[in-house]
Length: 127
Image 1: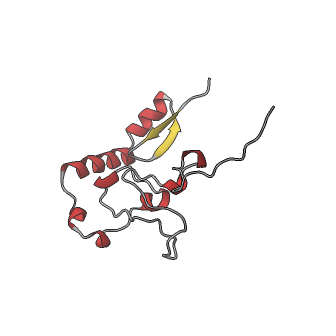
Image 2: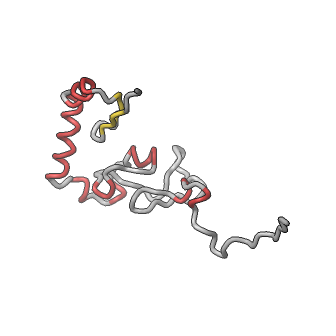
Image 3: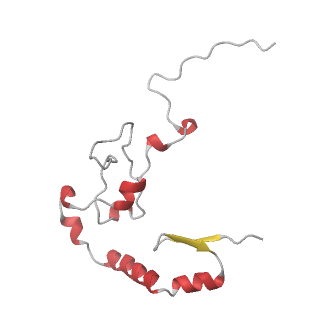
């Protein structure tokens, strides 16, 4: 029977889900530090929240994947469009909604219909 994978939300790491591996990770210094930082950020207001949006540093996770696990509570800036390293906007509809989703990343079957609706299909007689 194959072993499952354990994903740690605090450390953003994945490893085999065995009792010894999970215990080793949860008792590790890096995990304890990241977990403590996460809970500390919830208990006290961040000085970054008082800065104007343009002065906050850009969230690396949001810039890389278009999603941030902290959402609106993140201390970093989430731009409305993904930017290429050259600073120019990428083509396509990349405006994110509140959940970090983009219509450009959806498969065609989940895309909303076009403004004028779909064109009529030709009639095919199967009989």
